[in-house]
Length: 115
Image 1 (tube, one colour):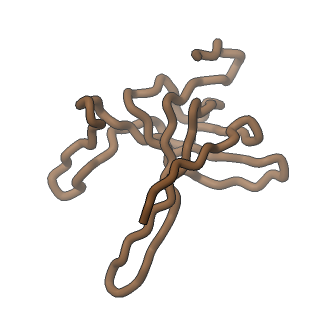
Image 2 (tube, one colour):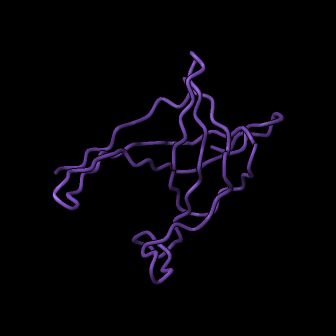
């Protein structure tokens, strides 16, 4: 399956940090932490995304480097893209969308936006 990045229009959604950043694990059995091709730690943040109709979804977003956000803060994922994935497991096919952002910034209480 070919992976094509899908840009996400984050300005049509409101994001709240549901769970603070933590290093993403490459192997849960060994505790090995996932890194990018330059050796930087990849972090994952659980975000609550709300659309204009009040529908809410939890999304797990990966980013390189630890974002300076905490649980409960309104945030903005910069450069967010999605990737469709699919795996075969026990004779069944599973698929989903994984999300990656260049950065996740705090926008609560009028915090200055980083570019």
